[in-house]
Length: 162
Image (cartoon, rainbow, N blue to C red; front, side, top):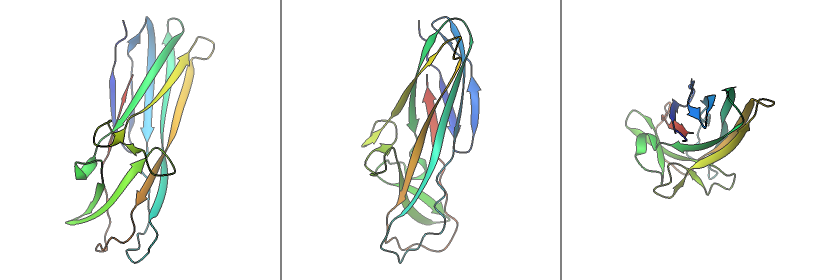
C-alpha cells in the first residue's frame, strides 16, 4: 500500500519526512527560494523578471528499490487568487505571478483557478539511494503598476506530496 505524505514549506524553508512507501523507508527534503525581483520601476514599459528554484532530494533509507512520485502545489499567498498574486507593502499592492515556464503561461498553483501542479518521479535503488529533482521558478511583475515606494513581500507555501 502506498502512503502519501505532505510536506509543507514556506519559501526559504526546508525539512524532512520519513514515509513508508511499498516496504521501503524514504526520507525527502525540500527547499525553495522565492524570486528576488530587485527594484521595480513603475515608469518602465518592461515587466520585471526574476528566477529562483525549488529542490527535492529523496534518499532510500532501507528496503528495496522504490519509486517516489512527487506532486508540488503552491498557495495563492496574499491575493487569494492564482490569476494574479500580490506582494504587499503596507496597504500598497504590487501584482506578480510565479510560473513553470519561461514563456510565463503555466502558473504555479494547486490545479485550480487556471493554475498547474508540478511533478517528478524519482527511482531509488540500493545502488543509487539518493535522487534529486529541481525546477526553476519563473517570476514576473507586469509593467505599468503605479505603486508607492517600499519593500514588497508575499509568502507562498509550497506543498510536496509523495
